[in-house]
Image: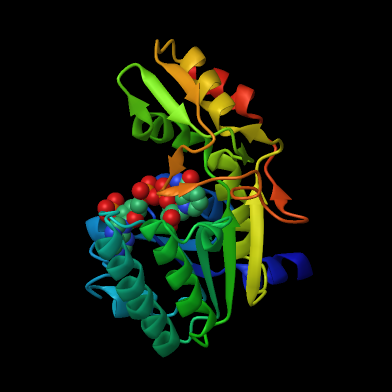
Length: 260
Ligand SMILES: NC(=O)c1ccc[n+]([C@@H]2O[C@H](COP(=O)([O-])OP(=O)(O)OC[C@H]3O[C@@H](n4cnc5c(N)ncnc54)[C@H](OP(=O)(O)O)[C@@H]3O)[C@@H](O)[C@H]2O)c1
């Protein structure tokens, strides 16, 4: 009886901004399975953090907000405007509603690659959170396995894929979602945690394995000077520091599952 009462007490009302996205939809499912009342919020459901539409209504009586939105346009100026405006609107609405925990998903090493407009915008998003007065946890993730396709595409020159051999520690989106959902029901840390996959792999090798598994004839050309989001990489650029939380899915396992 006592357990049942504390179970009920621990159920929370949680809004997932970007709840229709790759990570957002998985987080919504996990939290619902945990018995929480979860609202998946995004422009398609009438909640727009950029314009502010629907925010006040969506946040009424909410204890936790998980921000998993992504910008529709990654051009330098547009992406900065998106994360700054959406961040300000969302955090102001959370403050007014008395939200007790804001969680956001950003990127490992974002501050090490300032030539990237996208990563500068993610750092700006983090800074708004840190100064908002809303209790928070920032989750910095390494690249998702699902990012391999876009990575290969953006580095393609004819039949060649020109990529840096820099180390990465990518993670499956399922593992990202599981950790984010776990963080959402924990106390705010008012700090940043890093999350990564179980093993390190070089970027050129990741692309090679992805092309092989998808029977794509393009060949990887290794170039230490190849740019990634406008910047040359080294072996420290994309990997986490000490003690990241690790996903368990290995890249090979994900590849064979997703190409089956
Ligand atoms: N890709 C990576 O390797 C990587 C690594 C680390 C961190 N991240 C971060 O992870 C987060 C989630 O990425 P994802 O790939 O899951 O995103 P995604 O699949 O592209 O989904 C984007 C979501 O954002 C919503 N959205 C767009 N504009 C919005 C607005 N004005 N107001 C509210 N919601 C809005 C979309 O809603 P609609 O469906 O209604 O349009 C959708 O639900 C991003 O912040 C990204 O920076 C990505």
